[in-house]
Amino acid sequence: MKRYLLFYNFLLVFTIQTPLQAQLTIERCQELAKANHPIIQRHQIIGKTAEYNLSNAAKGYLPQLMVLARATYQSDVTAIPIQIPGIQIDGLSKDQYQATIDISQSLWDGGAVNAQKELVKAGEAVEQEQLKVDLYALEKRVNQLFFGVLLWEAQIAQNLILQAELQRSYALVYAYQQNGVANQADVDAVSVERLRCQQQYQQLLSGRMAYIEMLGVMIGQSIDESVTFVKPNPDHILFYNQMNRPEMRLFDAQNRLFETQKSALLVGYMPRFNLFVQGGYGRPGLNMLKRDFAPFAIGGIRMAWNFGALYTRKNDLRKIELNQQNVEVLRETFLYYTNIDISQQNIQIERIRKMMLFDDEMIVLRERIRQAAEAKVANGTISVSELMRELHAEHLAKQEKSIHEIELITAIYDLKYNVN
Image (cartoon, rainbow, N blue to C red; front, side):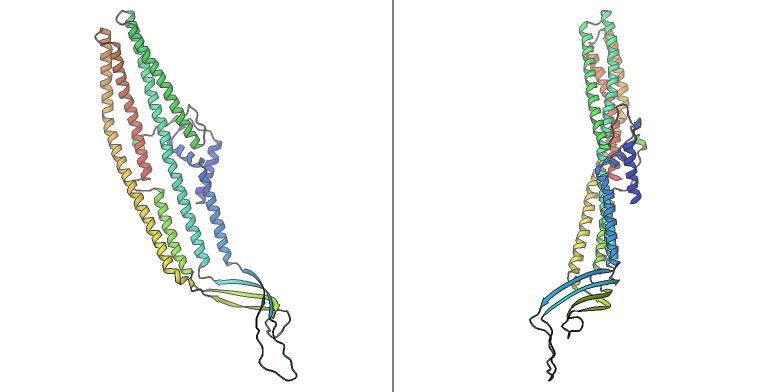
């Protein structure tokens, strides 16, 4: 655990002092987001708290010092029921005073200190695992922003291609106008499409920048527009085939805590043995027949055995067992909904893959149709508006392919998040 904390502390300092590289991967963003989140500080807080609690528990082996003082008034005192002629025996005073210092050293505590240490360790493990669960949830938010940026970039790339196509079409139609094949209205129609495409380009840039700024806040870095977001290769995304979520380790840690609590119940009704020395000053002292103040001292071995814990042992055990059953219900519920999500994501991945099989073929066909439309415009058999419609249909086919690629990667990472 200490190495885990040192890693995140180092990562936090490193990311604050080091500017982002020219390329940014999703894994790097996830690391930065975890290091930047305020909750990461709880790792150290939890660890320090556990250290103090363990230190306090270990002090149970140290000699224990207790100071007591009392003053009492009794309605009656012990008296000797014998009268001897010529001898007067004074009785005890009804007001009595005593101040003592009691020093004890545990010989055997029934395992109380060890049980307390185990409880501290088990409790710390639960808190650390819960913290890992909270940090793991950041990955999904990072994924949404990162793939959102990639989606904007894919649309921007297709928009630039469309702008180039419209520029080529504009030059083509303008040449047709010069040759009398097209008129000014045809040129204006292409110009309007160019302006609309440029307008969309600015909107896409603004959308991309908004996502970049949100991602920058999450990772605690200022992301320059020139940073390249690396698109993962869907064929190289690796993850476990078995469930390896931090929630599963949290459930295990909670169960270990409850087992530790069961073991600690045994300590409650075990006897305790300790050495003790008691020194005091009071009236009366150890000699009950003296009315004067006097010092006194006592030492020896003491045993204490409290059977009160036996009264509640059965109910305490049942409560712990109910807590364990509740953890298992939570585990089953978590697995139930997670498996549903995994099933849906597998279906989604398969659906996207099947759609992508047709993307390239549709693009080729759309390119042929657009080229044929250009030829028909040159022959005057169709209008420029029809050519624009075919051009947009080709652009839409290419854009859908780009979107499908990002959707596939996103779906695979969603599956990876739910499994790992």
